[in-house]
Length: 235
Ligand SMILES: *Cc1c(COP(=O)(O)O)cnc(C)c1O
Image 1 (cartoon, rainbow, N blue to C red):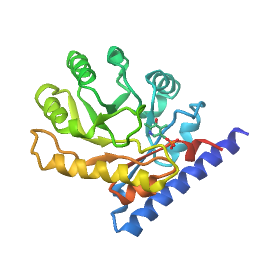
Image 2 (cartoon, helix red, strand yellow):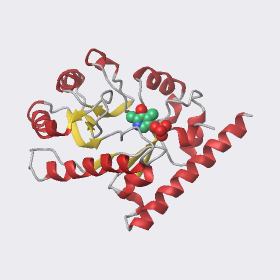
Image 3 (tube, rainbow, N blue to C red):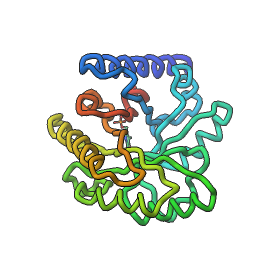
Image 4 (cartoon, rainbow, N blue to C red):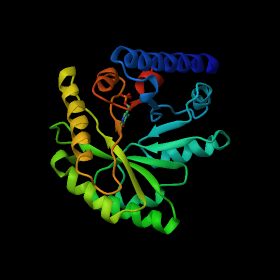
């Protein structure tokens, strides 16, 4: 039973990897220009991640720090890297343990300052992506696009422990794929614009966008990293 489940996760992951490569080839993009970030929040059995490690994947996304703590403890032998992709509360920054090498969901200055202070105390530097709200949905996290430049200027001036490498977004939750594409186009255009502003120390060359249902569209719009959960871990 366990073996069988492993096999399906293995096969689904291989299938996603192939679809990413094929999308790149179709679009004339180098195949290594898009990374797969498996999102393990629905994968309850930590051991399953050994299967992904066998496919060369050792960096995983999670939306809760508690889950990262639990899985990394269970899998301490595997040397995995954890990427926080969910909302982080300002008063929870001390839960950003060493196993978390990156946060893709920074969307608030108070949070950025709290993180920076905490990391300075620990003498650590962490990679971050700034999460931008590209849809009109009320309940989505992310900074509004018109606030991006002042936000980046602030990080550049005040947060030397945060290494800003790019932007992240979650597309509008809709079956209309064209509306999702518009979200990805917006993020790409924003990163291009921000890069013309010469903000010291900030070069946005990573775009984390695209999930199980829309990652090929995101790749067509310039994604460099797709976050895939259900297509790998759900039956
Ligand atoms: C859960 C989650 C994903 C993965 O979504 P799927 O639709 O399961 O592929 C990607 N990004 C974020 C921020 C998530 O919370």
